[in-house]
Structures are given as C-alpha cells and as structure tokens.
Length: 236
Image 1 (tube, rainbow, N blue to C red):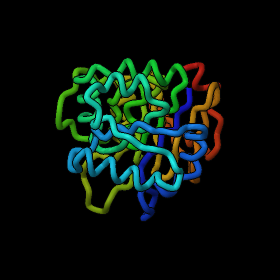
Image 2 (tube, rainbow, N blue to C red):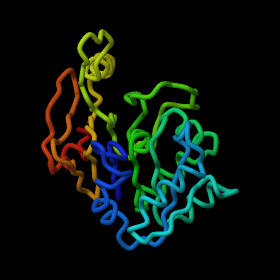
Image 3 (cartoon, rainbow, N blue to C red):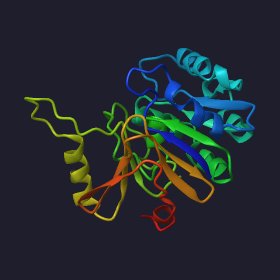
Image 4 (cartoon, rainbow, N blue to C red):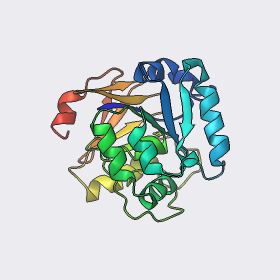
C-alpha cells in the first residue's frame, strides 16, 4: 500500500497543506490526476472545498477532480489514479461513503496499490474504526468501521493541552477510557505537523516532535522517522 496520513491540513499558522508539499509530491510521483473526497466538509460546500484543495496542490501540476462531481462515484473511484480524502467531520465523511457503498471499494483499490492521502478525518477513516476521532457524532453512519487500511486506531490533531480552569476530559483521559474497554487495541496519536507513511511493507512516522502509541493503559513516545514496520505487520 501507498498511504500518507497527515494529522492536519496545516501546522501552526501555515497556508493550507503547505508544510506537507514535499511529502505530497513524493506520494504522488508519477500521478497525473488525483481524485479528492470533500464529504467531511460540513460548513464548506463541496465546490469550495474542491477549489481550496486544487489551489493548494497547483504547484504539483496534477489535475485534481472531486468525487462529488461524478454521477457514478464507484466508477470514479475504480478509475482513479490516486485518492485524497480531506478533513472535517469524520462521522459525516464515513456516513456518506457508506451511503454510496464505496467503503470496501476504496479499501480494495488502496490495497491493490492506489496511492491514498488523508488528513484529519481522511486519516481517521484509514484506521480500523473511527472510535478514537475527536469529532462530534453529528450523524450516525451505518458502521463505525473504517477503511481498515492499518490495523490500528488513529487520533489526528493529538494534543493533551489543558487550559487553566478547564474541568473537562483531556485527550489522554479520553484515550485512557478507550484503552480500558479495548486493552489490546493500539492507538497511534498524531500531533499536528506529523504523519504516517506506508510504502509497501514499510511504515514510518514523519514530522518533527514525533507521535505517541497508546496501548494497554500505556503511552509511549514515537520518535520522528521511527520505522514501525515490525509493529505494523504484527498488529502492534
């Protein structure tokens, strides 16, 4: 598989997708046309979301089309050279993919070698399920099962920041709840500016600062450029 799973579309105060252009260029090497999935964008129209992404990727000189433009989504996915799935609300994204009956088709195309790029919600759905998303369940998809491209849970936008006077749960507390009920299931937490890259049989964590592995009640730091291949093929 060829996966690039970004935590976010921006890092700090960057322009849209700007910090990741070298990673995106490598991921899309040899690709002439990219199919974008805008369905996670609830407060932005599909057309505007498509234009935002197409403008951001213009320096790569790749033709970008959007799945919402096609009358037959399955045909578009079947014929795509590569696919990019944008951020927004993970529940809305997965709900629309199930409504179109395209979840298994995307999985099949990607496991057959079609490059996949996701950020935020688009990365969330690449894991086993979406049960560790940060998003509010504004809709109820047919299932919480994701594309299952990696046998792990993912948590993009990871941060355990706790403002002074805040009495709600931190991200670590929420992930601790998940681990109590799912002690053998690994979670990879991706702070903004980081990504997971899967190229064939190699899985690597990209980005300065690294990420974290949560499993069985433990939190372990993952250093930048760590090779997670052995963990990946042994289901961590």
